[in-house]
Image (cartoon, rainbow, N blue to C red):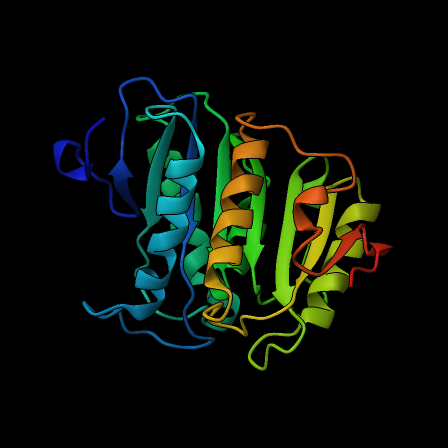
Length: 240
């Protein structure tokens, strides 16, 4: 297994770990701002926040099975109808084909990055998305998610993005045929700092399950110790 230095990167794809024959790939998309036409800074805290998620995913799968990369944004912001990170994410997926051709891809995104991940999840190589505290304003498209795995994790006390909007997105995606579930996390806020280990472990488990590296228990029992578990917006069980 080698690091990204041994591989030529494209404009939008930044490989982190590239095994010789990966069985799947995980692409990380960090958060940003609603509007900003400046590039992400060198000290990029949203990007740094995603690193432990990538490390947790690598620990959860056999060594050498999964390629890990991040999306490089041209601009920090979503920027309205420009949807800049969506173009970056799609370009990264196209660049990824040369490193992991025909391999299933899981997108793991936070906040604005989660919104971008959900937007490009219709790509033929994408098997699923793990969306962390996503920015899902009303009216976000869902029809392209049919047959895709969509896991949305959100703390309902998040003051930056709306968990209620997330649950509505999950319901609508489920009705169009997506394998959509939402998990209400008991703590963490928008930055997912309190209880960070729970966020990391559950994200890694879900990503590995989409890639076929581990089995997902019936009823999504991985969430039993973490809060309320939803399937298609319907409360499956209320936990103590």
